[in-house]
Amino acid sequence: MKLTSLTLHQIRLPLVSPFTTSFMRETEKDCYLVEARFDTGSGEVTGWGESVAMVGPLYSDEYTAGGIAVTRDWLAPALFRVENLTAETVGWHLRHVIGHPMAKSALEMAVIEAQLKVQNLSFKDYLGGVVDEIPSGVSVGIQDSIPELLEAIGGYLDEGYARIKLKIKPGADIEPVAAVRREFGDDFLFQVDANAAYTLVDANHLKQLDDYGLLLIEQPLGEADIRQHAQLAKLMDTPMCLDESIVSAEAAADAISLGATSVINIKPGRVGGYIEAKRIHDLCRAHGVAVWHGGMVETGLGRAANAAMASLPGFTLPGDVSGSKRFFHEDITEEIVMHDGVVDVPRGPGFGVTIDPGQLEKFRVAEYTITPD
Image (cartoon, rainbow, N blue to C red; front, top):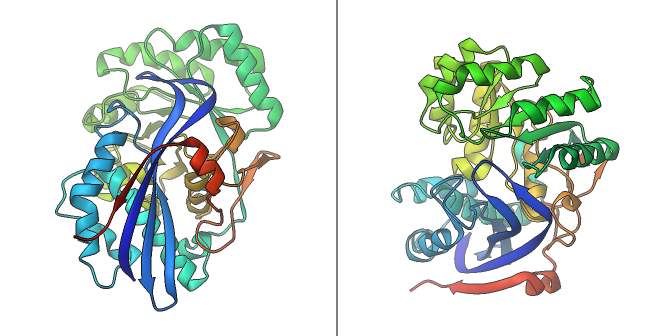
């Protein structure tokens, strides 16, 4: 395949309700989609990708405007020079650009979809997925009050979600967790996510969470604190899960060997793409480390791709691949539906969903076309 043009569509989708974490409060999804056109032996083919970078550099050092700039000035020119571009070689061709895994992942995603369309192959089959539906968990942001939190979680449990994840931060941790257990009991999967909001000094405080039968605690300490996570893991009974720290298969191997994690949250955008994410899955499976699929408030495009990734055999815990209606009144693809606690894995060629031109136009705030020099 030969890349002939790229169009970056920056969109803003209003959220059903504000989503608050330890580092920011979101009221809309601000991201960009990659529309990539290729010349192939089968004629012109278009593939789509999605950047999961946020509007500000708060979850990671990447952000929407930065991803657009590095794609335009550095990443796209490198791919335009490749005569026979494949999904498996995107990372190699972009290796000279330091960092920017989310921007690279969005491009790799577009190449993957175009390649699969040429082959008339689903993403699930390309990856080697083994199930047609995956258990769906839901991520609950920090609420303004305990009654609001209980109302939100009660609603999700009534909808049938297979697992509840609660965002926590200093000052909003033990009390809400205790309130949820008092209200709903111990007979549901419940975990917490700190998004690196604590330090090892907080170990005694965090150890109080051991009283509540949590499935895991996700990324309590900083991204670079793998050694400290290993120390904290020895002090807590609650299983330790890493997210922000896992930026590559090499980082995953280090964390496992140091005893810093017994569970890993895999997010393809964070590690540079789905191909690297599969390497991490395979590594964890070989070492007996559980994995689950994280979420970055993706549109239906990213949500469909994530569902296919989560169909691999190592994903033994419910992930954050929830239904579209969890976050959006309207999406830019067909709705991803959660039913009976599961999400169906799309089976059509590529990612199995279609970008709706009318919806794209409705929510687009900027468009950037990139062509070879």
